[in-house]
Image (cartoon, rainbow, N blue to C red; front, side, top):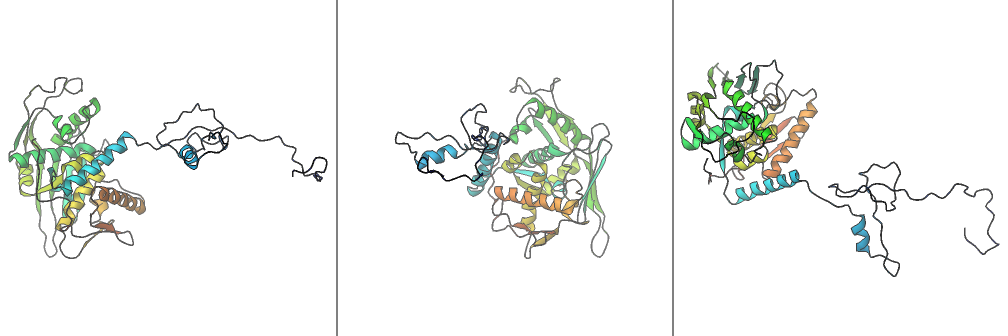
Length: 380
């Protein structure tokens, strides 16, 4: 305690004999990592604080010895930056909402079997050649060629692209300049990695055999099934070095011949989907399947809401192409996460988890549909 010189009170042995501790320096902080790690200005914090821990910026006082409040807030507030990927996601959400509001949506199409039952989300084990999914009485079974394996992940973009071409052109035989047109249509990068991925994806899809049908009704048994290939014939040009064509404007005769059964399924039961939504979530096949299914399901609901169980033989866990979850709450968490992402693209989505978290409640979307009747298609 300070006092008059020579009259200081006795310390009674409580004086602090340790040396003075000065503030330590820690690294700079910003959400976008825009700061420099070599800054040597004094900072308040712990000497073992990680480099990403926030710290106060030094405040330079004005000539009168004081700093304004705005200067202090400016210096202690971290610099916020947005990654390119996040910015692209926000732009995609804005585009989807604007197109829906202005009735200028670009409509693509999906085949009914892959709306009711999803393809695998991730690469199946190398020794797995049969994949099965069930939606009520509907059954989807895919048999792979041992050389190529089962379709999975972004392979599901190929049936959507082919279904869109077939439905809009009303033709089984489809001609196009290059397989990379699929990448352009869904705004995917045309780099070497995507080029190689699309080549092997076409091989998996071409070689797969699809079984789709119903196997039961309430008072009687009805077997109504179809077994088909996606394609009867495929004639595609790819570069030997697995890189995109250095002459993109060169015209080559690329063509595919859809199987009669697959083409008939597309023409008789087309499921409209938003092209920009598919492009926005192409990197997340589970979210893609969930969005397409929920837009279709909510449109088919009449009267009372549909209450779809998450678990059990007829639950969403056996319908979507997700992995087998060892704990129910993990799948429930995944559905809740997908719902939040769906509502970012479609705020009026009439679906929510039940109070006990065991069912997905889907109401009719007739008054707030995701896809409006007025369609705008691009030339494919």
